[in-house]
Image 1: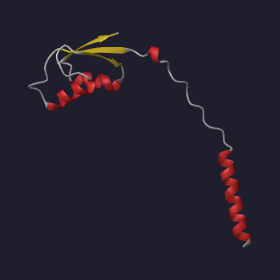
Image 2: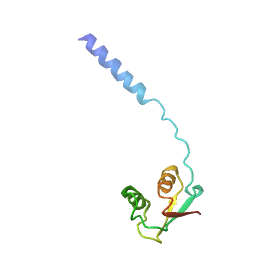
Image 3: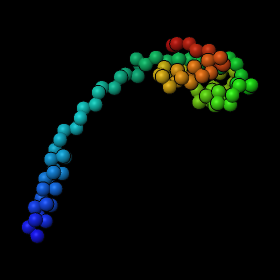
Image 4: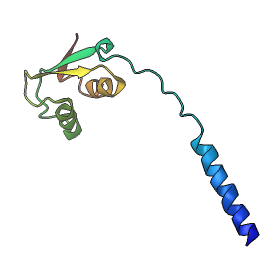
Length: 93
């Protein structure tokens, strides 16, 4: 029985030691106003092209010729724009 109590005590001490560690600091978040924005305008229909290109337009928030959306400039959006670059016009804001 004495051995079981020692094991419980050492386990409790280990848990307390882990709880006492300070939390790691996170890097400061960048301000939203410093992010670039892209205005994407659909200039051509997706009819006659592969269906995944139409789905990409929908993911960008487009669907009709002449519609425009403002998207945050990041690699994900840039990749979608690259996929449908023949269907859209892009402006940096």
